[in-house]
Length: 577
Ligand code: ARG
Image 1 (cartoon, helix red, strand yellow):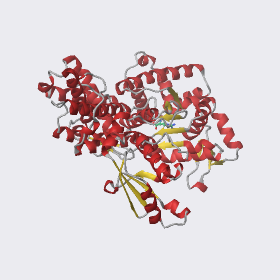
Image 2: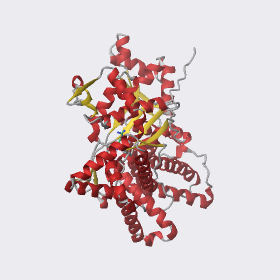
Image 3: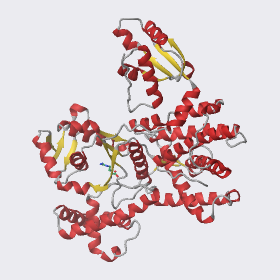
Image 4: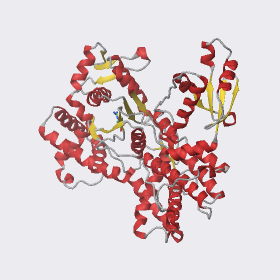
C-alpha cells in the first residue's frame, strides 16, 4: 500500500501531521481530509474536528455512522491523545507534550504561501499642498503593516504612494508663486499648505484670483514648461516633507507615483472606455452609467474637459497591472471613498479586465479626537507631525517619571531612542488594535499607558523576555537555542500558552486574508497576557537546570514571536525600557 504524504504548504505543521495520520489510518483522500479538518470551535470538544457530512452524503450513510466509523479507525498515540465522535463530527484531542515538542522544535515557521505572487499596495497617498492629517496616518500605518504581513508570507510586495498631485490647487500655488516668488525661496514646513489656504481666503474676496488660478492650471495641463517646472519643484518639496514624517514612523515605499503620472496614458484610457461603448454624455460631462449595478454614474471628464479622480484611478490601475502583473491590488483608503472604488472596479470589469476581481478596497474608519471628527475645513485637523512629536515628548516625560527604576536599565543617551520607539509605537498600536473599519478614539491617556491594551505594554513584555534571556546567558546558560526536555513544561499555564503560541502562523495568514492587522495585534495582546500570567506563577530561571533550559526555549520562542509580530505592525521591539 502506498501512503500519501500531503504537504499543503499553507497548513500549520500540526494540522499537516494530523492530516497525514488520518489519511493513513482511515483511508480517506488527502484532499477531503485537508478541507474538512478544522480547529475546534469548542476546546472542550477536542482540539480539531473532522466534518463527515460530505462523505456521508457521497456514501449514502448517516453522518453519525460515518463519523463513528472514521473515529474507530483513528488510533490514539503520538500526536493524538483521544478520539470520539459527536453527530457528524470526529473530535480529536491532541497530546499536549507532543504539541509542545512540535511547537518548540519547529520555531514557528510562517508558511510561504505567497511565493511567486505579487501584491501591490497603495497606501498613505497624501495630497500635495493639503495637510497631511492624522487621517492619512491610518492609511500609512495599516498599509505598512499589510506590506510586512504579506511579505512574511512570501508575497512580493510593491508599496505605492499615489500622491494627490494634480488639481486646481496647483493653479493657485503657481499663480501665487508668480506674484510672490520670494516667499518660496526658503521652503518651510507646510509652506504650500499655508499658501494654499491663504490663497483660498483671498480668492473669496477677489474672484479675479480664482480666474488666474484656473488659467495657470490650464497652462499646466497644456504642458507649459514654466508651469511644469514650478509644479515639479512643489512636488519635490512636498515629498521631502512627507519623507520626514515617514522617517519618524519608519515607513518606506517602493515607488512614489501620483495622479499627475496618469497624464501620460489618461487620454488613451478614456478613448478605450469610449470605444468599448461604455460612456455617455450627461449634462456635458463624460460618464459611465452604472444604474444597472445600482450605483450613480462614474464621472470621467467634466464639461470643461478637466479629467476626474475616477478616470485617473482607472488609468492608474491598468498601468499597474501592465507593470506588475499583480495577483492582488490593495487600496488602503478611508471608508468615505467606498463608492468611488466600487465604481472604479466596476468600470474595469466592464472594460473586460479579468483582474478587476483582484482589486480590493481596504477601508477604515475615522479618527475621533475626544469624540469629534477631524476635518481640515473645520480647522479641527491636527497636523500629524505635531501628534508624533507630542507622542515622543510625552513618552519621554513618562519615562523620566519612572526613572528611579530605569537608571540602571537604560543609559540617559538611550532614553531618547527608547522614548521615540515607545511614543511612536503607542500611536501605531492605538491605530491597529481595533478592527480597521471602527473609528479610532484618540485619547492621550489611553494611548500611552504601560498597562492595558497598548503598544508600550507589548514592548514592555518583549523587554521582560529579553532580560530573562540576558540573565540566563549571564548565569552561564549561553545564548544559543538549547535542546531541552519539553515534557517538563507540564503546568496548565504552560500548556495554554504553548497551544496559543502554535496559532502564530495561522494568525499571520488570517491577518493577510482579511487584510486586518488587528488580528495580529490582538493575538499579541492575548499572548502577552498569557505569558504574564505564567510568569507571575512560575519562575523561569531556577536551580532546576533541566526545567530552566526547557522554559528558556519557550521564552526564546515567545520573544521571537513578539519581536517579529511587533516589527510586522511597524513597532520597534526594545531590549530595554
Ligand atoms: N489622495 C487621496 C486622498 O487623500 C487618496 C488616494 C488613494 N489612492 C487612490 N489610488 N485613489 O483622499
